[in-house]
Length: 214
Image (cartoon, rainbow, N blue to C red; front, side, top):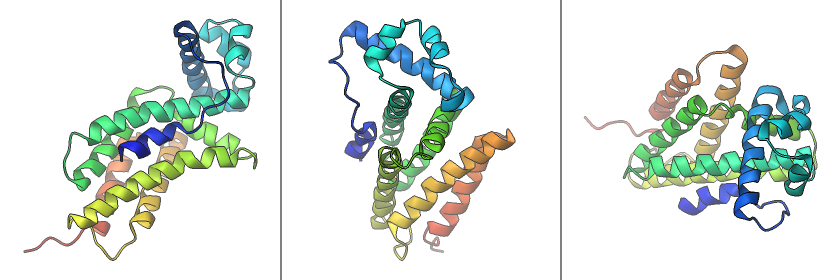
């Protein structure tokens, strides 16, 4: 599971070897871009505004990122890496697979509530997916979360807390797709994400779990 979470970083674009100062500049740009993409999307975010918000020069920006698309992919990977660390920390505090699945859900909700640039992930994926050439670079970001969730469902089946007549991969796809969909609905409707996800998680638990023995 730890390896699956680390894999969320994916392959990195070709950039110069980092220095302390260079890495700090890169982080500033990624954070500024994450906020801009969350607010206005890729098309609506101005590179000049991102450069100004990051407090860097144009030369400093282009040293790290050759284009807005490369920047968007880097923001996506950066956010996924940050989230992976938080999720790993949350799940490793629990022993059973079911408890880890529940902790993963809570950790993701908290990230949405605490990180103003959380919406950047959905907007980046939505906009870049319109370009068929970009899709192969986006797919792994979902695939790894599905694989990680499937591994937890499979372990929950072994532990006797989840139905064994259901495919763990299919259950994981349903869970991840539902979270993404509920996130989008909450954003469009301006409603909080937490109660929606918790209601869905409770429903999923009823469907997937083995009936309790009397």
